[in-house]
Length: 616
Image (cartoon, rainbow, N blue to C red):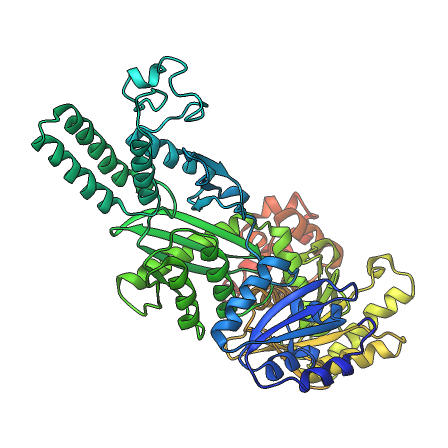
């Protein structure tokens, strides 16, 4: 833990005040690795230094890196939220939930300090005195917005600078085609450019109705003053603005009045989908995908809201959330202050809005699963298994055992192998158990484990690979028997029983001492252990059935006088089953075995009618 001990950190945490604030966790180099907020600093920070087994994998890794921490007391929970958001932006701590860089979501920049301000597209916000709008989506969409506004307001797109280049050359083709008002002309007043830029700003702020109203009033005034040419130009501009307003919904997030958030937490990746609605119609979608870290849904959504909307110039009126957030009033206040009007956070429970939440969640799930490979999912499950069982690293080879019997005879066992999370059938092994006084699962398990590891010690290549984990179909006693059987060979391999519920599904793992480890709360791990249990049980039952079938086949032929093991084997090889032998004609039997043996077989199945329904 670096230069500060775990106990020293715990002692410092317990001395903190019961006040709201922010804490910064730092490693030995002084790098901020995590920023968090708290209602009561003492309670929240001290939790990190209690029993590490209560933490998820990500938190344990973070705590292991902490060398020291600082705290900042805030005046309220809201102030703590604002401060936390600011510090996360500044330090970008490794263990915080961080959304991807905004380089894919550029801004529209307006150089307001110039006499003739100009628009451009920039990848990031900068503290340069300019005015920024957005982000609106990808670079292509942002360029489309800028081009549409320039076209609607007939703003210049050339490289000329005003007033420096006014009157130096004749207007370009754009002016003659009616695409630009020709600000390069000497007679063009600066006030006209200022008016057009003011309208452009209002459009980028989403105030389409206000711009349309102003243009309509100007058009009517021009018509009343008999300035028909100007009135016609204003009419054309009004049409262009109205069209632009209708086209707005093609750009994700541009002027949306309602955003719908859907959260999906996967094995490897988690994500939040944002569906943007304008006037009840879907206008676009944003997706943020990040590594799964085990954080609760409330923490993920809170981090997402402050980071995602904190970088945006335009905010929706309403945001629909899949979970109730304790911090919702503070986040709503923060976003409302940024937007200059109320931004409402709502968690719908039923109805059409709840249906939209489900749609957003499905979008998030689909994207996360698309980006996650099967190998990543398997590796994630093995890491989680190691975390749950306290293993030093994910198990590369898992061996699982099950017993199958139907009485005192034919007691068998199966050993299945999962290598790197996948069944390795070539490594499966089967055991026929002997010298047992009737069915005894505990004695059977003792014999199986003893024989398996004796074979390994004796150099049997079929058992040469050492397992990292043993899973036993059964409870505590089964696991304890397996461990004792290994101990006689000086082995200490992690061993757990697979405890089943009343539906024969593995509901938990149990140690030889009886401590149960629940897995139902981790769906991927629950499915993986269930797969191992089912595969092992199927293999044991399948092997038992095969043995039983072989015995049944042999016993049916053993009753025939003069038919010994060699001829039984020859007949079964040629005909495939007792049923086929029974149905065979005498000449067909004589082609396989000598005539006397063939007659004996034929008479055995045909001379006694009561034998004809015998099971194979």
